[in-house]
Length: 233
Ligand code: SAH
Image (cartoon, rainbow, N blue to C red; front, side):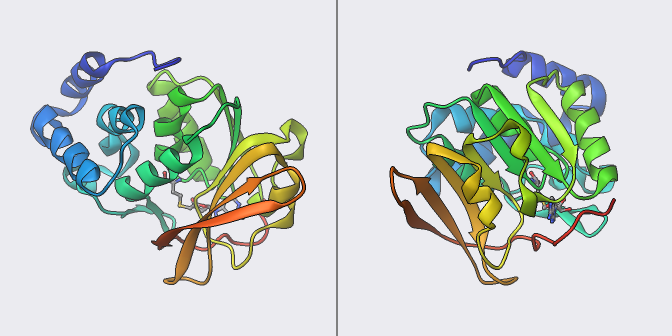
């Protein structure tokens, strides 16, 4: 893993110190990884990240005992932490044949997806519309020694033109159509992973910026909170 500063042993020691071993034991994490394997996740680097990233640190202590279940959970402010399978699937799709360096992420939320992806790419630019969530995500990633992420409070519908175009864009909230600005900020050969559609019936799609057209493939049904228009600032 490029840039991963903590290996599995270090991560586990850290967790042991912070929370006690029971709920975050190696066996609990192995079980989650095995489940994702059974569901078709093949990228070993991604699976290793799912094993390494202490998901329970991204949620309230009251729910932490469920952190290694393969399910989305509430994180407050009306938002959720994504299901590990969906995080793995999106990360795998983003990285398949990826030769680039920069990724734009829309919908930082608690920062779990960011933490899974960060050691696998050179640089992530991430946007979140709720400043308080962004603040907490930033703090957590620092605690985990992840430094290749730049954060911005704002509206993901606008993208982040300043550092574009991006080799990859990953969106973890669902718009009703693909935002034009995100397509504009996709580098030649770049890929956009995005759930599209109304709540409950979204299609996860991968759009690749080929020379003179965009190629789109469907990766299956997902369920995300909506990509809301406008920032809260
Ligand atoms: N990536 C997170 C899950 C994100 S949930 C994880 O790993 O668990 C979706 C997030 O998108 C929420 O935090 C929500 O506030 C944010 N969001 C919704 N609309 C947005 C917009 N227009 N711009 C930026 N973020 C947005």
